[in-house]
Image 1 (cartoon, helix red, strand yellow):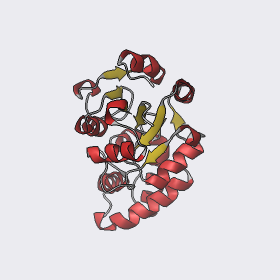
Image 2 (cartoon, one colour; image 1 turned 90 degrees about the vertical axis):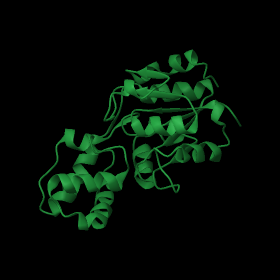
Image 3 (cartoon, one colour; image 1 turned 45 degrees about the horizontal axis):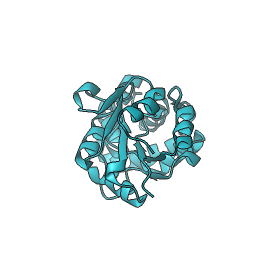
Length: 222
């Protein structure tokens, strides 16, 4: 089966997850007697996986990094139980995903968020049935920006590089797509720590609902 495969990032692309991530981090920090983090602080910590985010949170709050393993386990415990209390889909994400599926596109998620937490978010938002595959940051031996993360998912789904596209928001998505040799579409509204215009995307979108038209323009059709 080689219909066009759309490989989506999750946080900052499909879902604004910062509020729930912040709440879980702050509860973990509160239990350790540390001050809370702001939304902008947490937004700047997202993208490299949960271990990196927790390590940055500990450093920003002055907590001991020697507790990183315990802090990570506690954060994930809190977050997985409360993953969609405050998180929201970006405008028109649900409608557009249904439209893309109806047009014949295959869809998958490739995120650095751990697999269990990813499933909690996707299922909690009622999107699980819209994806053919999900590869969290701990499913394979590598994660974005390593292109192997994307390529393993593409191979697992029986797709091809020349009929696949990465759709994300940040520099890890860009590096993975470029390394895998597949087209790249980036959302401007996400969590990138650099200007998305500097990441050599094939298209930059301000709104998720623009995606079907952009895919047609790039001749990425089912």
